[in-house]
Image (tube, rainbow, N blue to C red; front, top):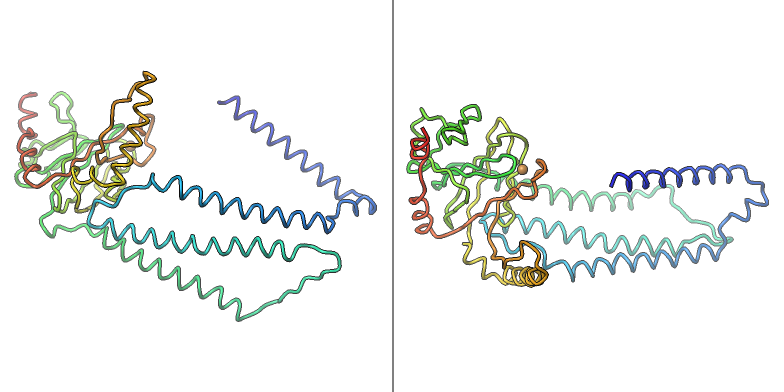
Length: 354
Ligand SMILES: [Cu+2]
């Protein structure tokens, strides 16, 4: 790899030197030689056609990408705010796509139409107030609209409050895994600090044992969420910057050492339901076809895959960042309560680890 990089640098330096000598030569040319270097009408025409060729290329690659890669996009959002978020993104995409399609065509067409020709003189406006007004006011209106809508959506999504009896969950990040903590019976998280971590007593999250709210806290390695109930996440990090990313719920928040960050959303689709979503069914089918091929070749990690929501780390936090993830299961309120009642509390864990 280092050899390849060194080689690339050397080649680039050589090209730079070559280009510089060429510029130097050009500046030294005698009049007769200089005329030979000026583009002729046929050169300009040829370059004009090349512009058209490039235009067809970028349109072609756009259509190809849409046809081939649309299926790798995320399925419909599984959270209450997700629809609003997606709508904002798709409207922004549509505007950008529309404007870029038209401006690219105009740019390349005029590049061809007004190519250099002997005897042809360019007509230009030194200034034109009306034109400048038009091409200033349209982007101003469109961008102001998008920004205001974006700010409104952002404020709505980021409004973390205690209304509607939210479930309180802590997401604890460390190189390279996630741990979740529930408030237990009282739904209140006990105080915690990295300074109180005591591995010998299995106090992995540094909970304050003298805080009565901590004793019924439940620490788990699989995130279960009840469908339809608002969840307030409190994020902590033990070591470096991490980012709690739950793509299917359109949620992401940085986890910063020394502070608690928050995010809140309401899951709307259970794991069982999302597995029946046509996009997900298709994705699972494609993945498992690939895995079957791998299995036939005797490659590892080729067991059939079943879709699950995931919590991923979205900050490059070190060597095993790519594999820093936790399974999320969205289930009915009854299933969730049953699962929660089967987990051990913090008090039980520390008392068996004196
Ligand atoms: Cu990380």
